[in-house]
Image 1 (cartoon, rainbow, N blue to C red):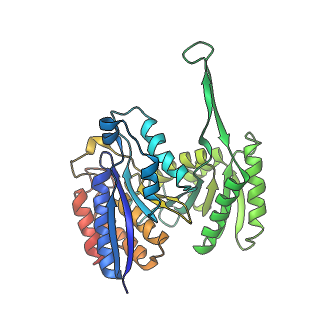
Image 2: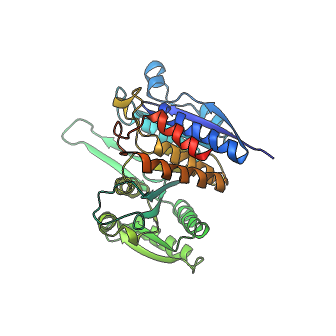
Image 3: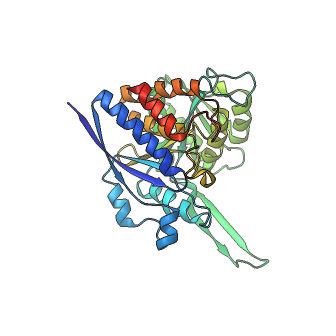
Amino acid sequence: MMTKYSIAVIGGDGTGPEVTKEGIKVLEAVGKKYNISFQFDYFNFGGTRYLKTGQTISTEEINELRKYKAVLLGAIGHPDVKPGILEKGILLRLRFELDQYINLRPVKLYPGIETPIKDKGPKDIDFVVVRENTEGLYAGAGGVLKKDTPDEVAIQESINTRKGVERCIRYTFEYAKANGRKKVTLVGKTNVLTFAFDLWQRAFNDVAKEYPEIETNYAHVDATTMWFVKNPEWFDVIVTDNMFGDIITDLGAMIQGGMGVAAGGNINPVGTSMFEPIGGSAPKYTGLNVINPIAAIMATQMMLDYLGEKKAALAVEKAVIKVIEKMDSMSAGKMGYSTTEIGDIVAKFIE
């Protein structure tokens, strides 16, 4: 019996539509092999529409996306739009209103990809960062007083609720348990941010009692950035707040080989989740057919895993590993193949 899924697709800006096209190509190939049918519905959100209409995304459009279990996103970001408008008006709004309270970022070095860390390889770099995705400094609490004067004051507040923190931590332990992971590390700053991370630490300790089979520990965020470089093999699953998670996952992308391979998921375990390459819109490469689509393809792999299609997800990952072995580089324009050729080769390996 064929399994059917309706997937919302937001190509977005720059090279976003190009890489999502290759992700869809791979989904269609794996669907044929595993008797899965995909219907792709396209939504026009991004900088180009904003420049034409002044619209980011409406409540009605968000409600339309609630009908889907999964969304495939290319990239949001346009050089002619002031920073913050699209990010807050589309990306953050989607995360908040669809309650995508988990940002899931695998950091995994595949064979054939170079890491800038000397003497480290795939056996050393294989961990997952779980970032709280709807609270913290990104909640938008704060304001400005006496703007553009010598007495200007700007306040940005970090909002941490027991409910928000605990559900993120519980998701992390459940993820570790379901995926055979043995250790969960809380990353924070308990020695300075004593209010917020006292809450995180107490919630972490309480939830950890329910998972005695999983080892736990704590690391300051500044020390974590050092250990990502010196001893990445220490980490298995990390849980942290919104801001710290945003920062350390970019470092994670670099040690796993760069933005060309890094994918992430914005997860609502009981609602609509969104999967994306994390490299951005890369506007200078738009239309040149040289951008690396591997990250977008790995976003579809994460989507398949989330949908419960484990065999299909594994097939995509195995095909990507084979293709990486053939590529000259992860960098745009230096891959040895075009964007579309890489999508074709991945699909061929799957078939």
